[in-house]
Every structure is written in C-alpha cells, then in structure tokens.
Image 1: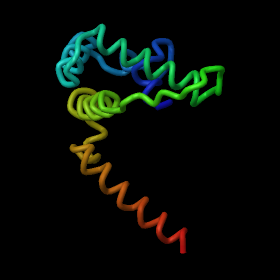
Image 2 (image 1 turned 60 degrees about the horizontal axis):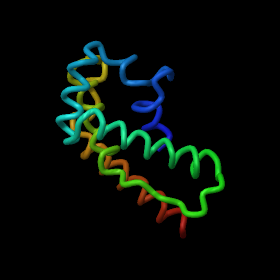
Image 3 (image 1 turned 120 degrees about the vertical axis):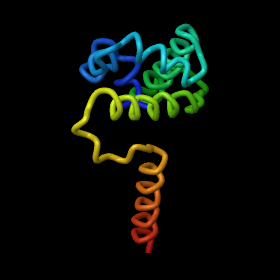
Length: 120
C-alpha cells in the first residue's frame, strides 16, 4: 500500500510514475485501458488508497471503522507498471522475469517455505 502510493499517488515523490516513464501520455492511456477505468475512476482509487494509508497505515486517527480497500486495481496497475518499465524504459532490467505473476508466485513459494521452517 505504501509503495503503491509512492508510484501512483505521490506526485512530488521521486518514485512517482511520471518521473520514471519517458512518454507519460502513452503510459497513462495504456494504464487506464489495462485497469479498465478512466482518469476520474483511477483518481477515486488513489483517493481511497490515500485515505486508508493516512487513517490506518501511517496513523490511527479518529475514524471508528477501518475500511480496507480492494486491491484489485492496485495490483493490476503495479503489474502493468512493471511490464511497461521492462518493455519501454529499462533494457538493463531484461534479466527480470517478464511475467510478474510468475515472479510473484516464486517469491510467495519461497516465503511460505521460510514461514514453515520458522514455525518449527
């Protein structure tokens, strides 16, 4: 959540997507098509994530009920960002898995083994 906000919500941060990609308009158009929303819909997701981050991750404020947002769009946007960077921005990263789902499953499997071993 925090890292997603660095990529997509923190316009002044050094990791904000517009500071990384060379063709911001192409990236934005393709991202919105990939996640199936428009600019206003994506901004609504950003606002939801920022509220969750600010009210329950970074600080526990006065809201009596925690609303945990769906991470579907967050995941889809990160998977898209990863593939876009590999294919358009960073030839030096070519050794990374081209499919983030595969890389994620390998890391998840490794983490599961560590967890089981630690529980013994």
